[in-house]
Image (tube, helix red, strand yellow):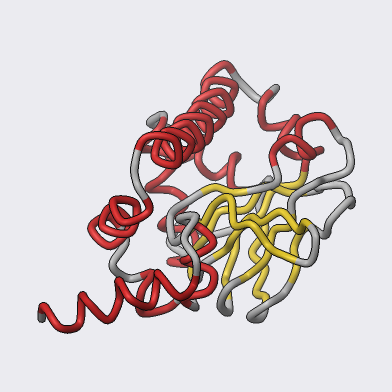
Amino acid sequence: MSLIDSKYSLLIQAINKIEPFETNEIKDILDFFEIVRVGKNHTLVAYKSYTKYIYFINKGFLRLYIPFQDKEYTRFIASVGSFISAFPSFINQKESLEVLECISECELIRISRNNFEKLRNLSLKSSKLIIQIYQQIIIAMEARSLELMLLSAEQRFDALLAQHPEYFQSIPSKILASYIGMQPETFSKCKNKLKKLK
């Protein structure tokens, strides 16, 4: 696997941002990953299935949602440069209560659970990398929980627009409304209000 392969450049940047590695160490790490391309609406983790992979997003958008009583509750949306999986299932190897789905066509770099464990045992630095990937995910989920608890729906709309304006161009309004805990009709009103302000 060539390190000059541009398909891995974002992953290399993300890894080195977490824990700097030498070129030969990066090559060893990349041997545990593989690139996959999947279409829009493709399900990576089905409800009550076992999660096999952690994904790094090279291109596209993914979401985690919980299906309940004929509704879909979007728990998390991830975009380019993010690691994502149905982590409780991945860690504990229990049935996933979450669905991981591609919102768009995606190019992903994935690592299997078996390879993830091998990477953890590869060296002290790679073990630190794994811990810090987990820490990043926990921090992101905690920030998400705090937003849901402390901000109004309108404030969550404004925060999402400020942090991820690209979501509004690429992700269906129904999914974004579910993500910020807003009724689709209210979400549409906020979008229309925004258009009038421009």
